[in-house]
Image 1: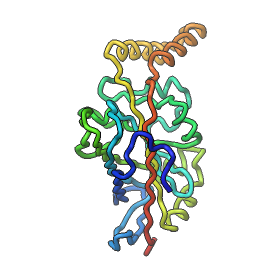
Image 2: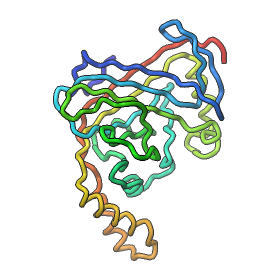
Image 3: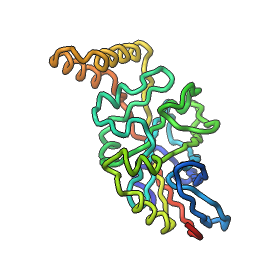
Length: 256
């Protein structure tokens, strides 16, 4: 079923290729047969690669993406901020000119993602100098003057150990995810936003405010509250909602 929010994307042009990646490490293996009839060994927990192609109805300058994987229920994303609940922490995380990736405060998006753990992808149209907080692969076709877009996203789940031990909210969920995976249905959900570019002067001011907020615990409560309010007003991007893309893949499990 097509999602509601296709105002800015020509739905006839959408093409999604979704790949379950094999890897080594703290993960179990599963042999599957895809819809194309090919057999493949995948690992879970692990990573998934999604290639999105579509044409917009109007130009967007700076795409911001939040995405998640659904296996009966939401699978958390492998992000260093998983445990963060303070909104200022979401804003201040990794404020650099190249890779600043605060969580979107767009009300429409947040209402649709209530209770979901998402992967965030920022600065997709700029050369990446660090992969600490965003995980994207490949040469993205992202000319700001073109309506046609190609994004290649790599979405990773936490490891088995992290799911079992480090996140109490997801403790005990690993077996539940495996049971859903063996049913052979997996859905990727991708929300696309247009994020205004932040001026260098504003970025530097946000950096200073965040350093003060984070590094000086001895400041008074009233000043900390003022800083908190200023950071939320000045440093939260005013994202515009573009579209939501759902993609479901089906496969047959041969051996687990």
